[in-house]
Structures are given as structure tokens and as C-alpha cells.
Image 1: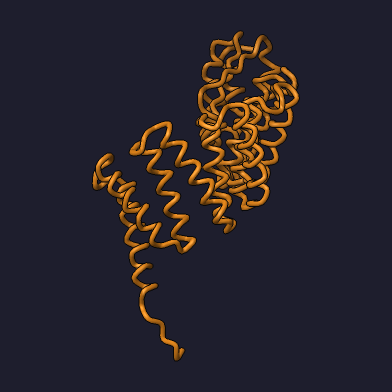
Image 2 (image 1 turned 90 degrees about the vertical axis):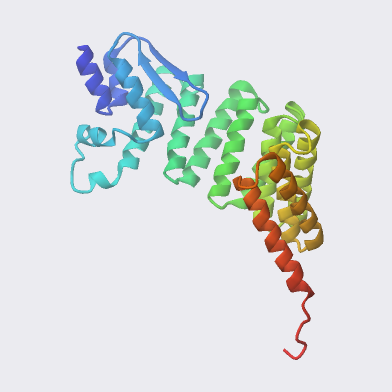
Amino acid sequence: MSDKREALAWAGGAVGASLCAVGGTVLVSRGAGVGYLAVVVLTAPAAVYACTRAWRAVTSGDGAADDRRAAGEDGPDAASAPGSLSLKTAEAEVDALTRALGPEHPDTLACRDALVKVMEELGEWDIAATEMLMVARVRAQVLGNEHPETLANRHTAGLLMAAAQHFEQAEAMHRMVLEARSRVLGEEHPDTLSSRYNLARVLGVQGKLEEAEAENRTLYEVRRRMLGEEHPDTLAGRYDVARVLAVRRKLEEAEREHRAVLEARSRVLGEEHPDTRASRLELDVVRLAIRASALPTDESE
């Protein structure tokens, strides 16, 4: 097969067929971000183009029109579903690599990570969470139950569960990952802090405000100890504490915390920074609530 025909086969979206057709060695490389997927067929120089198309198809759905034409789906409804073709392309990529390298190969798992990213971008939260849990299960078998990559997959699954509004499941997942990361990585590791932050958010959404406040306070104290009192991340943690206090109707305490955060953000970030403006707004809302709570009630009503 000529280089041109190889490139056209890839551009047409026949990923699995192309892998079989071109032969040779297949190399899949991963970048720093989730969803980065580059496929290079070493026997075909023209497959550099295929590498670009595979990455674009997985991450943004570009080239979906070519995929539809290759699949014979140029009917009147074909143009309305570019995302579905991107998903099909990613699924074909996973199937091809599973056959070529096996289900436990790191590059097959990286491709499944990219498939989850496509599902996420399409808003398919439930199936994305299920796929992510399946990847986590394989990684647990290969790397261990508490390996950082296994825990990262479970953390992502928790985020997807929350996006799908399965908050109890998300809470359980974030608790499990937080406990494991605390043991394996330590309380101050960025991944551990991320798990604590997302657990606090899920608790807040469910109205478990006392627990949410406790997690936010822990997060704030760790950041203060690590980064300093006026680091932007520390101030963000204190801001979250103040917001939970306000929801719990601890208005005077919330007012003090918001005022302290506003003063620090004004110094560190500037008066017009979005975070400073958010603090100013929250402080105004809390002060209004304090004034409203001080008004006499009409006992005749």
C-alpha cells in the first residue's frame, strides 16, 4: 500500500482496518494531558498525518465529516452528529490496540483514558464513569490497588459520578481515594489535597455541611502550613470555609473570614482580580444577611 493510501485510510477513520493493513510496529505515545493520543505507524512516513488526525479526532472531533464520508454516512442526518463519530473513532482505536497489544498494555489503557475524555466532552457522564472504573480495575490488577495511576482513575470516576449527579457514589469514591492517597502520598501531596477538595464539594452539594466545613478547614490549614497565609491557593481554601459558614448561617464568623480573604486578595492579587471581586460580592451578601437577620419580625403574621 502506498504512503498516500495509508494516509487516506487513516483520514477516512478506518482506524482498526488501517492498523491491520499497514502492518509493522505501532507506537502509541502519551503526553502530559489526559486525552493526548498520538499514533505513529513506523513503517509509513505518511502516517505522521494519521497521528495528527487520531489526536484531533479523540480530543476535539475535528475531521468528523471525513469520517462520515468514509463510513458512508453522508445522509441528511449525518452532519448533526459529529460527536458520535469522534466516539466511534476512539472506540475503534481502543479495539485495535486491545487486539494488537492486549487489554493490560499501558498504551491500551492510555487509549481508554482518551476514550473517557471523549465521552466526558459529549456529556456522557454515566458511561464515562463506568469506563473509567473498568480502566481502574485493570490498572489495579497490573499496578496494584493503591498505585497512583489506579487512584487517579478512581478519582476521575468520582468526578464523573458527581457530574452525573450520583452524589452518594461520588462521595464514597472520593473518601476511598482520599484515604488511600493520604497513606500512599501523604496528607500534603497535591493529589491528596485535590481529593479532599472534591470530597468537600460533594458533601456540600448533599447538604452535609458540618462535614464539608471540616474538610474545607483541613484543606485550608494544610495549604496555610505548606504555602503561607496569603498564597492564592490558601486564600481559596479560606474562601471556601467562609462560604460553608454562610450557608450554615454562622454569619458573623463568615463575615470575618470573607473580610480577611478580601483584604488579603486585594493586596496579593489586586482590587479588580476575579477572585478579589468574588470575595467582595460574597462579603456583601453576608453583610446583607446579617442586617436582614437583625430586623424585627412581624409577630402578627
